[in-house]
Image (cartoon, rainbow, N blue to C red; front, side, top):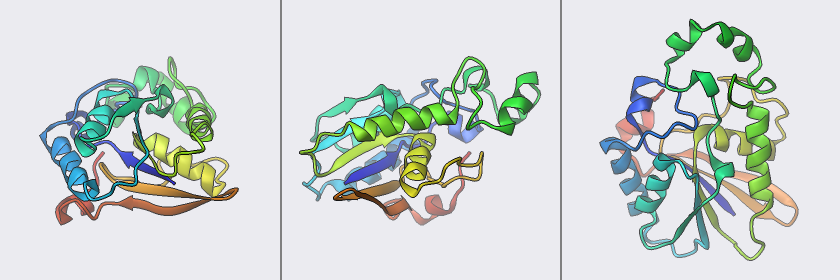
Length: 204
């Protein structure tokens, strides 16, 4: 079983800035979301391994949510590298000459100085394929794009569409079960641990 957790909120999320592999930390609300995760998970002793993206927003979320467990990192769990589009809002990126071409097919086209969602999917799927066989429950604290690509792969979605993918909120929980050779999506975007207002709010 693999539990996929999206990191908590950052100021760049609030501002609608493309974070990618840039490294803003959690803000106060993001840390509160991670603490809510800790309250939810503290009664569960069945986690064998916690792995996080090395980006600080994911690593900090993991360390707050699982304070009694060692957290390792894996670069394959990083968010998409948006290249020249990182740090800017959608409106700001829309004024760049490179944006329209990339946005037509971000799955297959590499962002200038960055990568494509197809490349993100390949490295994320490779990470899942390398999970230790003796770990019955692995938790990965990672990013929305990474979670979306992993779920798309399990569901057999060949080319996930730009901005019409699977929605995962900040600090949400998704899960994939392993039953023999089968992989089954058990839950997506579970936010029951968050206050009702945060469950309904759509962050950038």
